Image (tube, rainbow, N blue to C red; front, side, top):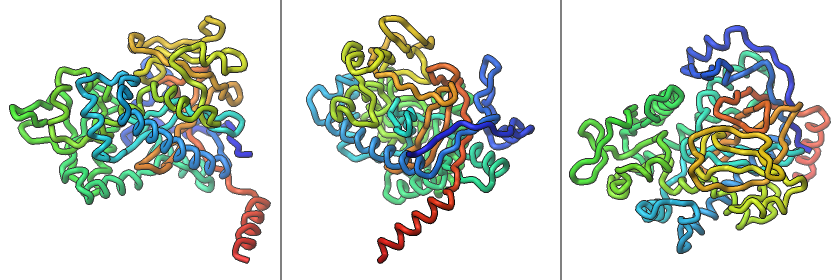
Length: 403
């Protein structure tokens, strides 16, 4: 069986200085706790990585099936509470086959079986931690071990492919969420990768964008043809400028149809399409449906739009066992079966990245209670080399196939 374990690990005495040097400066939360810790690590065996690769790509394809059905079914976008004003904008994006860029699944590891918690497929965070911070840690702490960081070379290659295919213009605008330190770091990383892909990159503030009299999106008087944005679709769709999105002439990464993937309504709709799938948790728009499919009656309440664990509640027998405050409480709710994914008493979330349509890396995050929050620390990971016995078995299998 594929294995994952949590083990002690020596922390580098100067890791904070090293983090700052690579542009990862937000490693301390507002309450003083750390958003990165390396006194422990998560160790995968190769079978676990193989499983995660397969499950991640399968889940992504299942999600695309759901999007296709929602877009092409009358009322399908209403289930996701997509405002009527922008529904055609979303549909046209899918019908046009606007390409997927980057997303991260959050998975529960349940006795060797990954199960979907949610899909961060609009403006996924933790990019600096998942790339350079993870890689630097592995190089300095466990240079002989394997690792599966978010593969930045895949991001660069995909951006170059988008440019060659005409999906993005030679000038790419990168727009972080306003006054957000974390997104400023993300913007710097995207800008670097865009330049490696042969693009010119401009980091611009949301407040400096405007709509021209002809309906085009402008930045300081220049038309914006292509954009990586960290301002989420659920907010853009409800802004005053939403009526101008369809005609603004900008290619967005991720595209408008990904608003369905970053929406927690995806979870019950996936369960409706693929009931009983071993990598899904029972989910519904009614809590009683989920309760009937759980062994102990524990389930999770989530707003359809929420980030960083805000307004999430773990419930059993109408009693709240664990909850997180937040600003998303007014949104409609979905309900999902609870999966106990603790290792050594710590809740561990396995983040698996998708670039284009392919698995592209792992990010580990953990919490002392059952809710993974924005402030929950990222923890490095390693991949244990195969034992001699496993290597011999693989060689024997390879030899038998050739024979």
